[in-house]
Length: 477
Image (cartoon, rainbow, N blue to C red):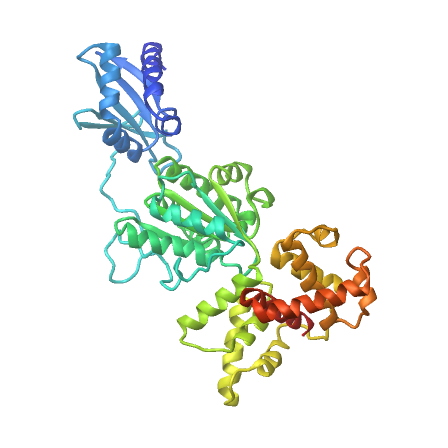
């Protein structure tokens, strides 16, 4: 390395560092290496053609001003671009580009014919498409509108929205979406892709499963075309890789993906990844990849709560033009609490049974169908169960329910709990009272009467009690 070039470039970086945002400085200036200084022209080495084009488009004026400050008004700049020669026996090929756009090519020891215009082979080529037109491999039914938001997925969904609106120009890069089977990882990832295509039609979007990526890599490896494979993926603006946990047994595929990831991230392109585990829990994946997965945001999808499950079922019914009694919807939502896929599968089975047997959908038919999905057994409802339900419903701490407090919301929650305990359990009034901090049976009687009176005069109170009654009934089924 030319020490004069290094000194000039170090002085330039001191100026640039104070002007450019830290993240942009790290991305676009730290990777640059000063090569030599000849006739007042500084030659710098950059990692790729895209890197060179980005600097010329966004920072050419800044570079010109800083160089002229260091070297005078006759200062010039040339780029040495690292290009893969396609032959591991040769030294790395470089392409020297002057500020005026004249190009010379060398690989340090001998001239090497470099043809920039050759198109990269497209592993997703579809008959009838143009050479470099890429099918995004997206399912149009997966949209944000069809993805119900709840406490279980709010962070992931909103981060996905932010990514779709400004792909590559946000702090969620990469966005890693993780969670168990059937919770909507693929739906959300593809929704991001579909939204990008809607908002940014010129962006090149690609969704691919990790298994397909690995198979493509193996095919290209057998044909000695790994460079074509990597170069193709480096053309993508928004790359969505599903189920990255399957990279754990594909070491060489990880190497290829590492190169692709670095190029895309450095180029300001967006990466969206899904996994069944948090990045920190992935086994068999290279640490250098895992560290990059942690650069952006990791957002988990959890099992949807009862209210979200009802919303999911109602949205599905609305989209399909279906009607179903409210009590049936609540019964399904209460009993199918594992994942969204099972929830939708239950609904489809129920509709099929209704059509085949030519009978209306009711609670009896729902119970019959759900025998295939859940273990049906008569559950004995306890006072503790009802207490927990009421506390959760009113967001009241369990210990407050037992204390002697005159706060209206606590008193009413306690009275409703006693009322439901009397209605749904076989416990005596004395036993019920003992579960509320040792109160006697007269307190229970008074509470039950108060609840009945309020239900006759307060419509909101009545709705709350009726909804809690339904929850307890469902729990007993």
